Every structure is written in C-alpha cells, then in structure tokens.
Image (cartoon, rainbow, N blue to C red; front, side, top):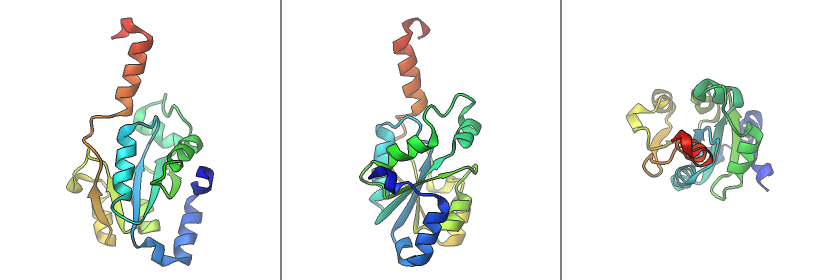
Length: 164
C-alpha cells in the first residue's frame, strides 16, 4: 500500500490538472526524513490536520548531501519515501532535488504549505512565493526538541561510550 502512495512530480501534477478540486485542502510538507523519529510523525500528523490531503516532498539523496554533508542520507530516497508513505496521515510522497520547495509550490499549487516549529511563518524560506501564489503558510508540530542529528549522536555514544 505504501509504495502506491509514492509518486513522481509529473504524476502529481497530472493528477491535480485532471482534478483541480484536489488542490483544495491539499497540504504540502517537506523534509529530509532520514531517520524517522517522533518529531517527524508529530509534524506530519499536524500538517495533515490542517487540510484534507497530505503530500510530503522528500529531499533527494544529492540534496541531502548538500544540506547535511557527504555521509547523509543514511537511508536512500526510495526507502525514505516508502517509510513516510506508510504513515496513515500521508496521502502521497514525492522527491525533490532543489534547495527549497519553491518550484514545487509553483508546480503543485497546494492550498497550504506546512513547516516545522524550527520556523516561524515569517522565517519560512518559501514564504514570499507561497504568499504570491495564495498558498497559506502554517507552522505545525511539537517543539523542535527531536532531531535526527541528536538521534545519531545518541546511537554513536551508546555504541562507543568512550566517545561521549
């Protein structure tokens, strides 16, 4: 079932062009989602709660390396997409390679763009594009006290207690 939720951008665009009413209540959330943790789940569930359908855009492997360094991602894009797609709150997943989701906002034109609590509505990098397109920007999820980098540090410390 989760693989059926994995799409490419052209498929999503074509579906929305065929059924423009699907854009009403469509929420776009995005992120790397390298090692899924409770903060991710809370963010995605809260994003879905703001609309009727949730499309999650995941950074490509090359994009992840540009953002996080040469050792990331730990999990390849197709597997990350399948894991995120397995969540009940997610309707579709797609990948993207750009540094931000500005191009996706222009292509998909969702009703809502959801970001996590490490942002404010005013600090969302794509805010100006969203505003120009009439897309509502929302900040959702719990406080940013869960991070993949923290999880990685805890796993490394548990594996090698002398590295603390």
